Length: 431
Image 1 (spheres, rainbow, N blue to C red):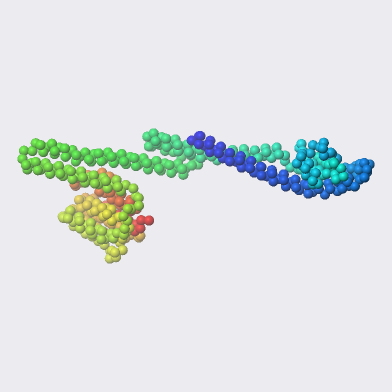
Image 2 (cartoon, rainbow, N blue to C red):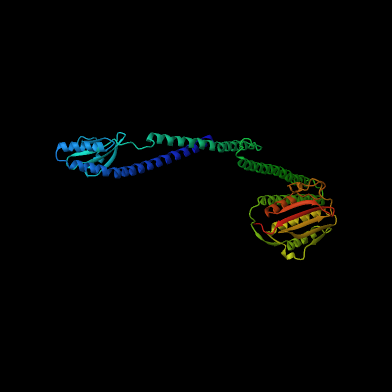
């Protein structure tokens, strides 16, 4: 993490340095060129007049008089130099030879020069007064100071980010090493609480999933061991059977254990398949009243001693939702099957609407659900004490997963009729 921070920091510094060099070069080139043109335009008139005055002289004496007068007219030195012996740069000298007035810098000073037409000499003005402003050294130091302040500010701003990333790295490494309880402490990243909270939420969810998978694996191992043990025991007893009737009874026991094992495997496969609330594969419009009536007819044959009473509103055709028909039928069937096992005489089913949602409510007149178990019964492999039958405890867990898959909710409570009440509340539109 430190190397990443260093690379990121120096990358920003390099970008700033490059930007500063480009800007300095452009400003320098533009300023020098424009300043040279401005100075040449401003001084060329006076230089040309001075050259014209000297070119009109006939003899050396009059030339000296005019030259002395010109020296008095200007506030800076005026010299007549030879084009051969002068130290004027060649590029400037070529311009002057063409009759132009040239402004140039030489050895830290500024000059302006023009050529005398009457002789092979130059009229050189300078050193000229210096322009008021910072020197190139001061400008460079100023830019350097700005760059240093920017680097310091970036380091201060990046420090909290680096601390947050280091905390995430440490916690992630601890989790990867097996410490699922590792979390980012809020006092470690006071300025990065959103990041810490998001990471801790992810870690909590991961720990819950792993613990759930571990518990599920343990429960599956236990549940599979029971029918397998009965099959093995019954198989051993078949060899000791003395009559065909006894042998048939023991084969029937093996068959029942095999059916129980097959049912358990089927329930497990369904439970795993419905694990994630992804988009439904076969979504369609489902009329809850028609679907519930079909499921009730199937369960009447399974529980002939129980009376199933259905209550629906007059506008039953409007009680439709978007979902998977088979999954919803499975959820309603599990609720009715659970109620049928515990009911004494009757099971009441109500289908209706609640705002923009539809509900299916199942009541029974059985013993009800013990206090504190209303939410726990939706966990896998949880069976209430004195539960009839040999179910695997996955029926209500499947209902909860189907509800989650449909963005619905399922709750358990005590029924006014004396038993339990299950309420499956589903939105009319999933998305």
